[in-house]
Image (cartoon, rainbow, N blue to C red; front, side, top):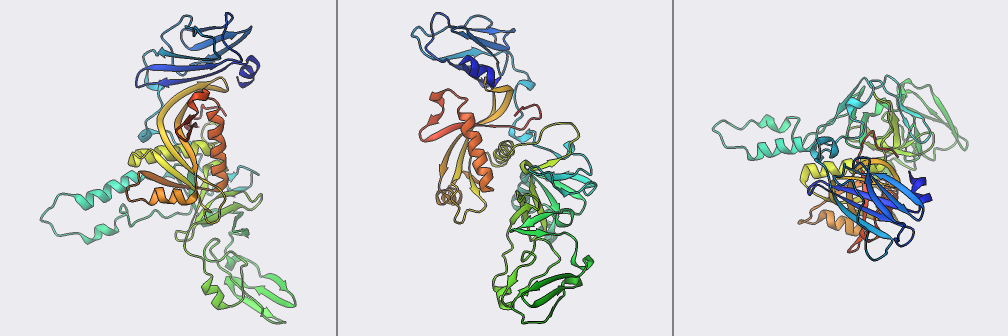
Length: 448
């Protein structure tokens, strides 16, 4: 389709406007329209055909048009043609699902039990076959907020207060803990317990998931000093002078990375890492695959960075589709259409934050540069500094949601937005300092 559009010198972009039941169609010609130019609706309203100077292009419309005749052309010759066409009666299949009922990438019902989870870059297995005996969808944040609101604002009664309610598993003070053999499925990630993951790295250190008490003694030589790692983390030093204390642990991501060198026990205390999320990398190709949480302890793997076996054959979700799903979840949860996307490593990072504003969450479009109908979010976006992003998110009157992604993922999203902006008519690409773009919503039928 893209090659045909390039060869013809004609570009077409069409949107479905369901609220007014119309189609907006724009065509860009290689030169001004003339007597050879013709535009008409064909195939019983399903496609638009454009001819210009012996070149022809037919493009599918996002919905069936009522008109099935030649379309009017501007009296003054110009290369940019636009039409508003009435759409036929729209069925449920013509429109994408609402944010509350969106189809998320790789839901639990889409995944095979015992599926291997691997690095998408090199294919290395990080969760082995039969390791995951069950997949479970994590509950929506709406549910926990609703229950918290109910217990804070429920009608008064004469019964004594039940203090045990604070310990129920649906309050703001509760979390879901990772469980061995269970793969928890979030909107854009999977959550596993540490023991189910293999061949991962943390902060550049290869992590071996075999508990220390099961390992054979390891031998290392530091200068003339022999260090022998015995069972259960015992360190035996013989010969030479002890110049370092090596931190050993059984948990693969908690406290210090395996093999951290510290000059004294005081340094070990002073330099202890805070209980915050860290980064997880593939042990083979060093691609970042997700995050780890020392407090759980659990490992979160990004869906756009991994492979997984699904019930039906289909492609893997992209970062753009995962972000679109997260934005829809935010809209469903708080009706908030604006978001700032910050890099996880924002301290000293040269990467700009993304300020996103969802204009239309239920867009359906077609383009001569992409195959088939696509459901998407129509977005205004702009680059802002990390400081401005924090200011927008932290303001008491803020209507902005804060999200975080790795810096490479933010760059990939920016490239996708810029590429989608090029599909639109030039006059629609900018608005008061913002750029317009599209983020495709997840659908197995969407082609890349």
